[in-house]
Amino acid sequence: MITGIVVALPEEITTLTSKRIGKGNCLFITDKILVAYSGAGPENAQMAAELLVSKGVIQLISWGCAAALSPLLKPGDLTLAEILIDAECVRIDINSLWHNSTKNLLSEFVVVHTGHLAESKSLVSSSKDKKQLQSKTGAIALDMESIAVAKVATQHKLSFLAIRAIADPVTMSLPKAVDQSLNDQGEVLLGKLLLFTLLHPAELPGLIKLAMHFNAARKTLKRVAENLDNVIGFDHLTPTAI
Image 1 (spheres, rainbow, N blue to C red):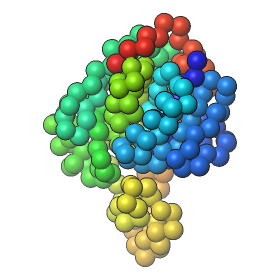
Image 2 (cartoon, rainbow, N blue to C red; image 1 turned 30 degrees about the vertical axis):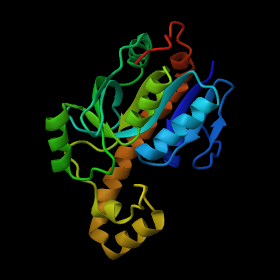
Image 3 (tube, one colour; image 1 turned 90 degrees about the horizontal axis):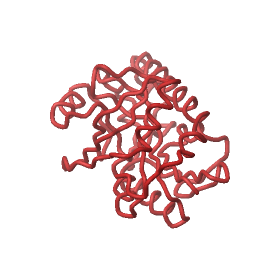
Image 4 (cartoon, rainbow, N blue to C red; image 1 turned 90 degrees about the vertical axis):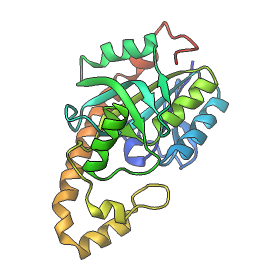
């Protein structure tokens, strides 16, 4: 029984393994877990999920960080989405024993929130935009990959989980340096980030704060990873969990 995990960023992959994975490729990190490094965005996530399906996985996990849309969520909190809302406001329900078992298991180790998870096809950087999305969708959190992975799972009648730790709270607008250093696929280019910060030193406090929040999210993901064998080993998975 092989579980496939889609991860968008290398910094998120390190919460699962020290092994190097090339972008667009996948690698076994244990004999039962196959991790794909997708890159950011729904298109990349879809291709990574399809790659994992072609390798014979029987369940899919979207893994990484998310932005909070609810003020109740703090950096480092964990979200386990029970309803997904795509960019066109189409709803996908996750009604699975696997989801409920995972929530009960992980609640012993970290703060877990369940609710709606919304999709964005580009980085949402302003607090105002996040609040508007919350009002529109009723979602508690937002990411760019989970819904694409869930749609692949639905197509192939596979079980699915979105395991996402909060990085930026809803009250925080991302520093301009982040927007200025993005490539076309929504990934931060370190060289551009450092150059922009050098030219605009007032950006540094915001970047330090964001880094602290991101580290809190990564710490939570690492704690979840320590219990991942129990998560994927749930005995009563059904092939049509979505």
